[in-house]
Image (cartoon, rainbow, N blue to C red):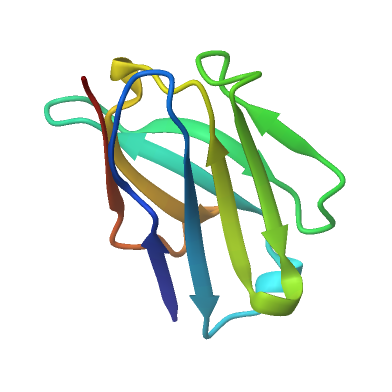
Length: 113
């Protein structure tokens, strides 16, 4: 099983990034997926979830209206489009199955001028 995140980096406040998570080794199309994030010294924070059918998406209040979670089943890839980024969005971002069975190694996002 592999979940490999990419797309992180340094961006100025107000900027955008799109994170990707390539999944393999498990039935991606039948699993709900989510993004979580963590900053040093803080607990893991849930960011967004998307059902297997893509019919239901949920967002933390802190990102609602700015982030969009999506998935491409043909590519077994999960995405997180992040717009209007703020310094408080700086963190390591991880994709995970909804039940936390599998989690990737993370990609770092830094929002700074």
